[in-house]
Image (cartoon, rainbow, N blue to C red; front, side):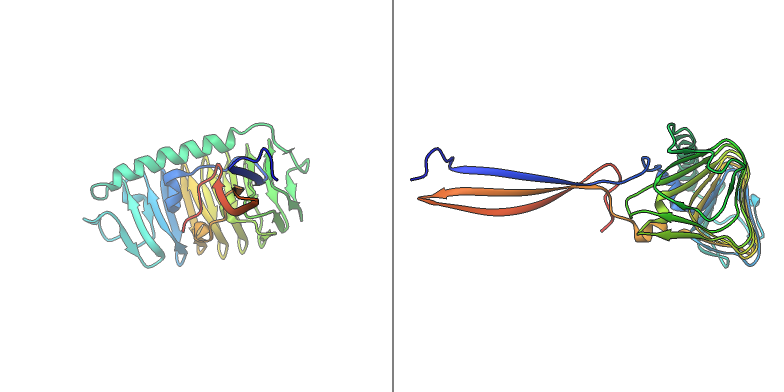
Length: 286
């Protein structure tokens, strides 16, 4: 005989799949653009841009060497160097309002990223020269100019985050590559600088770049990135690919394992159910 057994019993086991690193920077509407600037974007053709390009709160005339013929009647303009469209504050209805929101969101993202405190590492390499490092998830801060002088590896899982704060200039020198390892995703890597950001010739970058002033990408450089500048962006026969979210990493989540049991005579019958609850960051797209 079974005594003191409830008619229905529930059991739950919880496992957390956690992310390492700081809270992800929310770009909001600014994430819709491969290049977004407040004072102009120029290209020395042929550059290759995958994603939208936008300027605001200014007119399309500050987008130079894109062979713009006139201000379109529609909301955007397709061009040969851009797989995507160009947007400006003087384009048709809805575009100015959308861009104003993106400007605000870009500014908020910059303040959020540069304002984070309690870095995991401060002033890594005393002279600001970064060479051949493998970087774990975390918040990194420099109060000097930073020069990345040899390949770096970003190592971590698809849910981990990296934020690199530079309160002066950031330069990535010729031919350097950013290598992703262990499942790390470009969308979770943010470089934020208050000084000029320069990507020199023939290099490869991964991740979001938030600039207080100008961003320059030199000849033959490639960037799997978003370039978001509060002043100008200059490309010189460069490639920018805003495909970071096409392989969106999974979000941190809780796994709940439920067991429901019912008593039938002297037999305890149970079935199980697994439930996933996403945490913090946005749930992956279907």
